[in-house]
Length: 324
Image 1: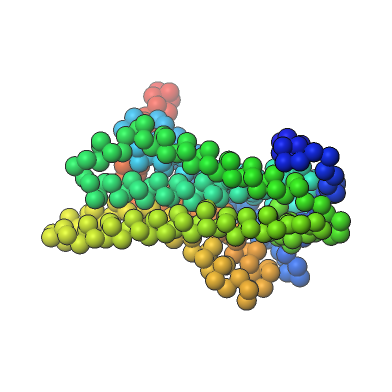
Image 2 (image 1 turned 135 degrees about the horizontal axis):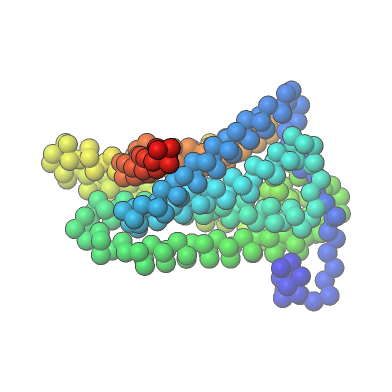
């Protein structure tokens, strides 16, 4: 991939690439290993929870609606995000393997950023689904078809993959003549391109565009969506009906808050935060939402809750039948 990208942009260009990078992570924190043990347990819960949500949606034909296809995709992305990040972070810090080969670092960055980006766009899909359900209840089935939701998910996946190829491709055109120490907890784009000794202006411009594309624009769309939803709910005369309609949004709103609040806090106070505080905030923001998302949907979405109970009852009956 790297050779193809570089040959396409220019021939006979020599870049100084290190054999490896060193991920520095935290500094001066006693008993930090307990934090990585905590991340391990968060990862296990995330894998079990998201796998359960995907299995319930796959096994129950009543949950094949467009909304739950988007929920299933969110669970898949959360599972990929946790798997891309946590095992490698634990290997680097808990088992003291901070040296990461150049190519492996680029791959690590690609998957981490792709999953984080897709999480954001998946929340956009879910917010659009809620807008259609509340703003156009009579036309919801016509507007939110299976074909439309699959097309929307596929478009965002292709967009994210294309953007990440550009990110990694531009990084491979940087030369590293001095330090190879990445001051982060994973192969992070900003700390890597700042180590370059040749012109890194394209990477700097991209570092300004990326947050707009994968964070601020989706967040703006979600807030705009909920302003329309609020307007629509305000026109409902009965308080009971209004509350019932709002409850269909609570799971999504909870996930949006979990995903965006840590990132917004880091951007707002980033300059005043200690490096360790910033790393903890971002790492928790990366691993805690994938753990809590399936719990939130299981507890706040009636259809998933009832389907899970039904599947557990069926499994219990089959076990009893086998004993008999």
